[in-house]
Image (cartoon, rainbow, N blue to C red):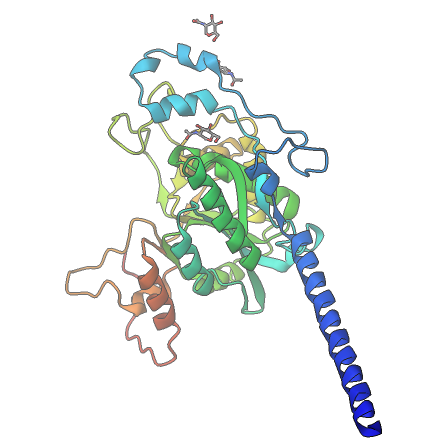
Amino acid sequence: MRFSRRCIQVKTLLMLGALGVWLLHLCKDFRDVQTISSHVQIRNDIHQKRKPTTNDLYVFSWQECQRNMSASNASDFNSLPNTIKDFLYYRHCRHFPMLLDFPDKCGGAERSGDVFLLLVIKSSPWNYERREVLRKTWAKERLHNGVWIRRVFIAGTSGSGLETQRMNKLLALEHYEHKDILQWDFDDSFFNLTLKQILFLKWAERNCPNAHFHLNGDDDVFANTDNMVEFLQGLPNNDGSKHLFTGHLIYNVGPIRSPESKYFVPVQVQESDEYPPYCGGGGFLLSGYTASVIYKMSKSIPILPIDDVYMGMCLAKAGLQPVSHMGVKTAGLQLPSESFDNYDPCYYKEILLVHRFIPNEMYLMWSRIHDPHLVCVGDKRMLS
Ligand SMILES: *[C@@H]1O[C@H](CO)[C@@H](O)[C@H](O)[C@H]1NC(C)=O
Ligand SMILES: *[C@@H]1O[C@H](CO)[C@@H](O)[C@H](O)[C@H]1NC(C)=O
Ligand SMILES: *[C@@H]1O[C@H](CO)[C@@H](O)[C@H](O)[C@H]1NC(C)=O
């Protein structure tokens, strides 16, 4: 009798102990969730179109931008494609609320000088597979050669109605796990890429002003970010405080005036037949200093839908030049003959960036160029 009562007491004690441990765990989980949610702002209220309150960090001073009705008095407005009409109606809109943010991406504005290379990757909400493969290949956040590489994907919204909501949920889910998405509430269309770029520069000015360099690129390029870091470290001024803007240099070109082209820019959008020199938008490198100058210039330059040309316009206005880097091949890799293997990792060991790669090629190539047994003979750097 006595024995079994003691047994019950012991059991009770054990159970209470287990309960305590479980409660402790619960508290810890709860703390973790709280920490995450205070760092990651997932703006469900916007998805639900709830009336904004003053607690909504980014919304309280925001009013939906109205269509500019006078845009339709432009000559031959009605003959323009719908995308161009749409562009002209909303050209002046530059403020959109953030749906996903991570203000601490660079460790806060003051400490953002610890970020050597910030990878800024334009990605439309649809491109989940591309983001996943980039996270484990060239865009992995890491310390390389003693300096930090950080990553953000920049996005708007896609689709319409329920589809938009599903896409926003997908991004929110990814962001919850990786904390690497900046999303604004505007339509992520081709002609809104300049808007995306400007919104990012504004974000960088506030949240990451001292990052030394940015790689600004698309989510379908192969970027050898190890080489980029080494190239940037080798510059005479490698703290990002001097002008740098380099990539695949394009000059002596102007707007394409044929309406069938993806890049069609009619006179109603830009009258001048010339573009300033610029770097192809697949990927270019710039210093933190230059990013900040471009943002300042952008405030007084009307938006041009072609984002890379727009960067060139901002540079021109500041009296700065973009320069060519032989290692950036946004028009693809041109090999001397067909007998050369386009996917020979030895080419990719030496370059900075190539357009374009699909996810499985990306994963394979990143792994092959890091293979310690890879043997490359001769110098393949000079191929153009
Ligand atoms: C342009 O549009 C505005 C309003 O949308 C109108 O008041 C104005 O008269 C128009 N100008 C011309 C030249 O048609
Ligand atoms: C609206 O469009 C007209 C005609 O293109 C332009 O002159 C005016 O500056 C635009 N307004 C705004 C607010 O951008
Ligand atoms: C850009 O985004 C705004 C906001 O979603 C939208 O109203 C506009 O139509 C878009 N512009 C283009 C050219 O797609």
